Length: 213
View (spheres, rainbow, N blue to C red):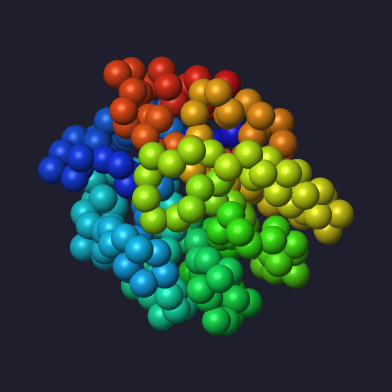
């Protein structure tokens, strides 16, 4: 199990301190949500901020592109030295080509599914993926409650990956806390994105370790 704290709910006036704190923690990954105000109703950070974060930490960076036509921006994100890039199945027009482009750059490639998207829609593409990211809240805002049906989607996806004999990471994003983390791991999740749970904790290091265990 890997923990990927999201910076979406961070105080952006103190972003450097937040990155430094996460760099000193046991979290393996820092999750970065890029929103365009079109695919999702919110607008978040862009390329200059990703570049600054990259220069500030050695942790793996997980860039989640919540944008229309994400295939247009793969080269720019790849140039920043990130380790993970994911695109939404609902927004990407050329899924095999985009995943192939990410992997050709030496970056782990992922597809993302919104809560209302049937998990079966990703099955034809998982052989091209290093990971699949299941949204367990509606994308665009932090601090939402976990959607319980996500557990069934994880089980179904893990079963299909096993059927295809694939070593697939399953990442889950949204509403993850100390109450549901164990159930997510038991269902087959391997990467947990936790923003508010970690960043609002008075003891974030201990919270990260507790989520993993």
